[in-house]
Image (cartoon, rainbow, N blue to C red; front, top):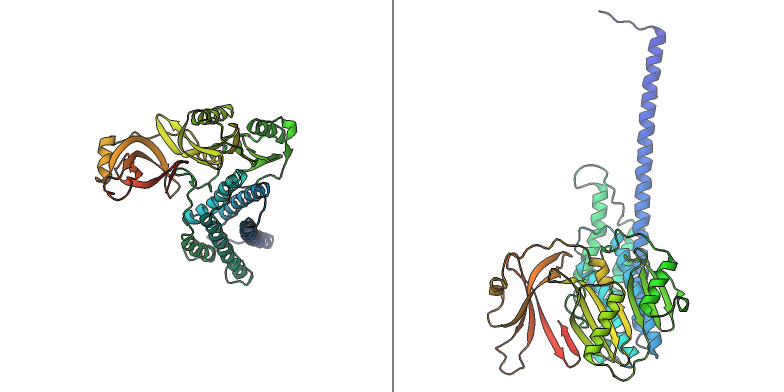
Length: 455
């Protein structure tokens, strides 16, 4: 059967086809433009994050150097608080970059500890103490590592500007060898080099077990909470600082992974989460007088303070007394399991029992309702994984963080050495997986008249 088309029909068909091709071409051009815009936005985001990271590292390095020449404890406290904020900002900038597939534990740990170490030295200075030679050397080592990290970041920025690395991570097709994948790998490889170098800085001993658990994740406790107004946050800050709201003035907000409203009065600085209005930390840099408080009173004041802020089911774990301040680590308890992942530090002044230091950021970052697994091993069974030369003093269940930012249920064994004929017996904490019996962690307890620390 022969089909014939009229001239009008043929013209109409050709017109429709031309229009269809035109629409298809327009869509392709639009998609290409959209992809180009997306790559441009992504490149700008990564470039800005690298620039922010570099700036934070420069500020950290400079403030650590300035700390060597500060003449008053008040100025040292301000500088330490600034280093703390800068380290949080650096972690936030790092989290924006395409390095999620890398294990950046060492770099995040460095950024966490540089802020915490500055605060520890600040507390010592506030009590009239002087940094020891070792502490000064540690601060200098941290400064050098911050500069080294900054140099790596600056080199990456230079490579981006000169076209040796492109930072668009938008795949342009299937398979693993796309331009975008190669670009992301180019940027990530630089951070792999960084991660390998961030292992030689000194071990910093200033807190209880697992107190350096990484804070690079978005806070779990505030994830589902509504934002609060600055006025509502002011009320919570006043409660934490034990002052009237009118006594506090608003400071610059802290825009890290845990966004905070900041308030100040005299020697006191307070941070309150923008989500939920939870007091995150407090620093009081006042001078500390002679000790007048008993240990029982110190722990009672700390526990009363935590309850007044709404923290229940907390148990004191380890403590240190230094330069007129007793800093106590409190861990959350759930079903008789110690949650070392959910820590709050409280510093009590020994002259009058007032709270001069408080840090709940670890708790806010990690606390959530957990479905804890039932232990598959009894304490006696788990003890078989402990070195037989150690004498077991006690055992209890504990949830501890892992290097991969996960959690594992363990049996915590407090043990004592028995083979040191020429030395005093040493106490250790040995953590054995309560499910499979693997030895997860060993910590050495450093016991002094001032308290108990771990290494």
